[in-house]
Length: 293
Image 1 (cartoon, helix red, strand yellow):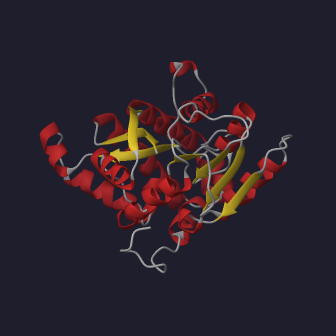
Image 2: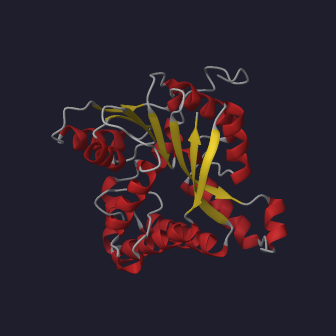
């Protein structure tokens, strides 16, 4: 564990995560599909796919990179509402442990897992990676790095490395951004509107969040001891996902306002449409890193 961080600093960011994900399950259901996956889908079949089919395809893409074997234990960092764990049990007959900082997600995910007809162990912990020390065989992390914070990157990758056996695989699925140098080199304009939207995302949508560059993920993972086996960009897939989410929320505007407020509805429409624009233009990307110990 990195010595630059004290145990007090390694308290999980419960408040930041709950500020977003515990807004209301009913609100999120207005624009998410039945899997309730709140991350980039994988539109392998193009526009003919439903959102649910594309999310399951994303889960299969992620799990397929882990070389899972029956009886292994899979750790799902930032397990959300549990869809990846359910799929892992169904397809690979593994034990699962899910970590989330969201109370709503923890309750829902454990309920879904308990209803499965499988002898495998199925646990969801309302806890962060900072306090998890059990050895596991594989790790999947679909989206949690955005909430870790740069000051904890060293500790995050070191903890993942410590939990895995030799040869173990860590699949990291995360949004990445261009550095200022890369933006200039690409010719993309860094307009006041782009800067304003970035600030809006940090303060209003994902408080405490931080988005890495590709090189930062490579650097911190390598420093922890990981070898990068593969990187795959899903940039266009996230733009499409955000478009579908925005259309879904817009179609349920009245219900969204009733559940929350017009202010929250407007804020989320700004977030979903604005992010889709960033992915389409190339300011942001979604990458899957296959890391091997």
